[in-house]
Image 1: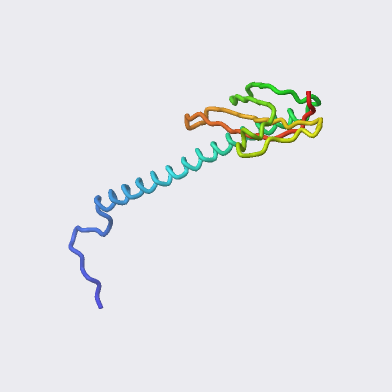
Image 2: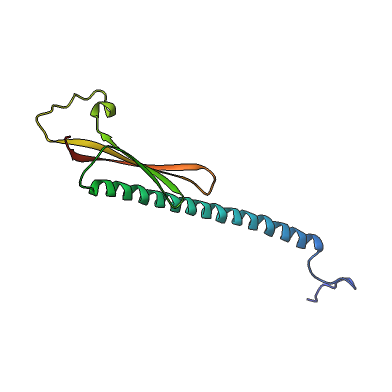
Length: 142
């Protein structure tokens, strides 16, 4: 079988319309891929910021519980773009669970202190964020 003859002066190849359509398709695909990557980078940065805030909050709780004299009160400070507060006050079970029975004293020489560490910062996405960690610590009666 003989090859099909082509008209003289016409060469095989892509038309300008086909090339233009290929470029448009490539541009749309590339834009979608870049959006996915940038969203992933934003989420990774936010996760890093949260991890740093949790480290600061845990560090403040550990420093408070390691001190020899546990005093009630509020402390505050800043650390690398993060502002923190540490609040310690007597634990009142009635506030947490109103239907709970009042505790019997029983002559105990210890009391519960509720310690809350709060860290705030302005995230890379422009929003104000915070992390709160709380624990109960045994302290001596005043």
